Image (cartoon, rainbow, N blue to C red; front, top):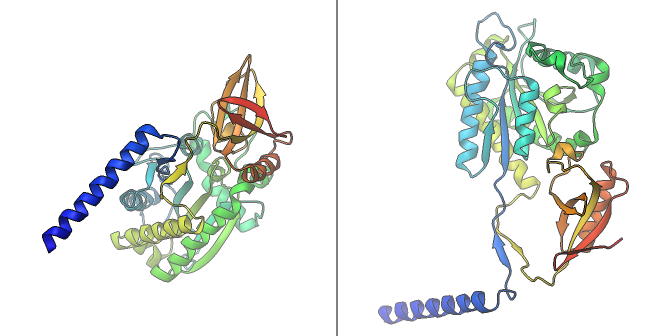
Length: 358
């Protein structure tokens, strides 16, 4: 009886597979093409490195060494769970803040995580705090940012920089962009998860989620946070951060926060179905046109992602987002206009031909 059932099941599966193959071969427009969503991309930035040891302390432990070990352990956990990870550094080397931000932007990351440890002249001060880039810059937050931003002066090419940006001026630190406002809520969400995990899992005092003017956050075009995992200048906390147990504990807390964040924003690796019907209309938002051929990177388009480009005669036309739902693309048009493209409008593509919708 068991053998008969097994053969019957095999026969049914084989027949179903054969029929499915026939449909694919002879009716390609009948079924949707399936593709997997790209992996979630995370840039992990171990602060300082090389000639920049990090914040000074009497115990002699080096911030650059602690944060690198945390970063490498965090990266392994994220890679093992299917994420795509890029490290700004994997060894003791010096990187400028500009290089760190460029790595994240070129990678077109979904998240940027910069890991640091704190220091203070009063050794009784302890606890963790996580920063996002924002407008609410208190004197205390401003001073923390100034200390972290001083790394920029270790870059021999800083004086050649064409950007009018002083990393220790109040005006530069407070000046935030539309790109940062776009990602601020997401950055705060992730930062709050990190802080709660530190308190719950490691019993580290929660000094809160704060906004300040870290240069490396200012120049990344994705949700970004800078973590001060604890105070090296506090004897108990410094010893914990310098221990293997402490470093693994910190990386675990950050890892769980990232995975919780992905669920909160409804990220899923579930395959997505895309229609293969050539008669279907695909809508896009046209945001710009010109003779220059620009790289399809967020930093060229006010932080917008999901970009495309065609050449029409002497002009390059640039588009944001893509959908077969007109209602969805109307929302994207509003979003593009809020991000600096006041004349953005909707176009459609059918059989490869472009036409204006509104």
